[in-house]
Image 1 (tube, rainbow, N blue to C red):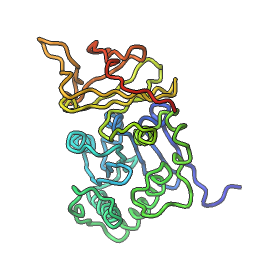
Image 2: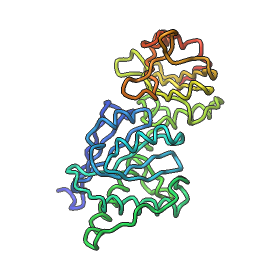
Image 3: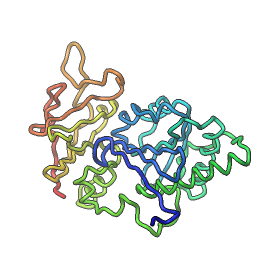
Image 4: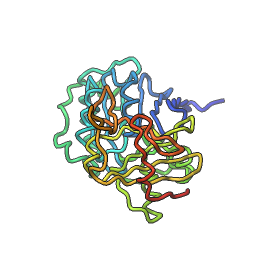
Length: 302
């Protein structure tokens, strides 16, 4: 017979692996929902129902968090794509029935900001404590229970930014060794960067990261157009050959497509993002025809 405290946790992998959008529900969480996505998959997250509801969002790196809330999550998160460079993934806390009110998300935002500030992991842009929460004592108990469960689920998928101590139980994702994570197409690029740094390849978090597509034919990414004016690094994770391919594109060596010259194409719905799709055979961009193989500087097996 199952323990009275037992629970079931449903995990939906939108891309069939850990490299894309994840949705989590918990039988002990009432109507709660958690969505998570790496920065490279944020546009897929914006297309889900999560971004049509009231909720709290977290911009995350390994050691830092920005906490916000909105009744228009898609619009707010889109603003952060251009406005903040440091974050690696985004997480959304909402409800299946869109039952949160403005007061509810004010409260949750305020509590999470306070938690992160106390342990020194809050992004400097979170200068205030959020909107002053206005919930009665009964609603405060309910939201406190909601938040406790949310923090538990965050730890389960390896997000410990609100904890200043190591948890006794290993996180679900953190129990996997780094090479296996890379082979699975692990959702965040931080493991790839860490692995490269440990193997003598210096690369920072501004690099564009892409995992081999499910049909094994290409690497797709939506880097920001402003990267063309900088020295731009690309990490391609070929999970079929189990290797990381590193490209370095010097600043101003590529341009955007115009009527009088060839160049990279942008997304029609988001012109601030490049629509990049590199063929796995020759690393030619399928949109522009530009050969990226000349920018390969290293291949690292894992």
